[in-house]
Image (cartoon, rainbow, N blue to C red):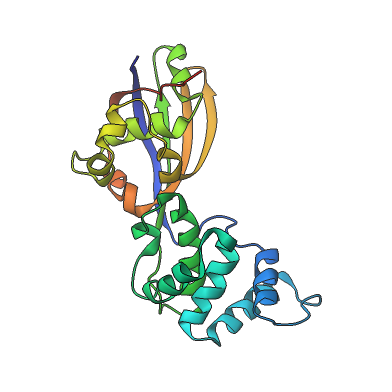
Length: 230
């Protein structure tokens, strides 16, 4: 059953790093991976600065290998890492890698490499925006109760151009009853309840998917949830 909603764009911005993607302990572990030595006396800022400095002391390809080994552990094999160590210098891997479930992590990899090498790597960009979703019938809100990303994307694309990338690549998923990739397209989702008939969604995703949403005006559209198998 499709539910009708009004969608209002509250704010929209481009960001170049994800909130809390890299924490002091991440920099510490990266330094250990690069055989820095004792890090016990370093402040959080020192850990970050030293990590950037030590990465930049290596050839870019070597730095990529350190970052990918740290982020992906054994999820990427040595051959994949070796290939990516060359590709990442020129290519937007956070957009182009075939497995979109890894895009957010590749974004974080590019972000630290871009910063450490003062722009030698492509700069990743993401979008952060808030929308208010309202309905006349509070029962309609149940469409967001399970796998809300799927229902939300089906709603958001109704406000974007028909040829927007998500529409072109996932047309069958949007129209159908299963959209597993939705959780990989929306990287971070927070929900703030306004009342029983409206909710504010805070969304972070790649510019690759939602750059067109910046120009969206308020609209009304339907959506539906994934079909849940019991």
